[in-house]
Length: 164
Image (cartoon, rainbow, N blue to C red):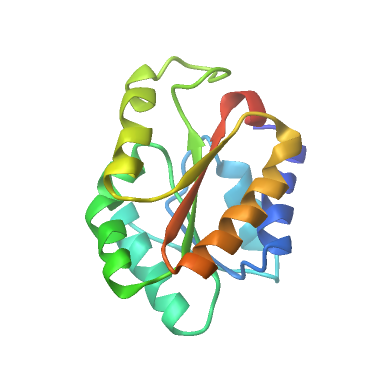
């Protein structure tokens, strides 16, 4: 990932009012994790798996924070049960995912393209797909606003076209 694009993701989160980040670092978003961990605007918590991350983010929201869950596309499957529980508690949570398997991906990971959007639909998690770097900040801000208004998780899927 280009460092300037990673900075755009972090700036978008900061501008959206996010102040608590949870994630299990992966190679596709490594630069984003590094920048967030160094940024005093955020409290960053690394977790052992994505389901645990959703639970930590939920606790952060109940503690007055505005959380984001940063997970790999494959991590969506791991976090499914925990994300589904957020609906029951009316917890707004921004979920940002580097979207594997879509156009622009440096490696073919087509299986993720087949399951990611259907999984989000099945869990009733609205989402936006970002295909251009210039759309990153606006989409993050819009999705964060919707999560807060709707009191539910909302996802941002950022494709390889936007990241690499």
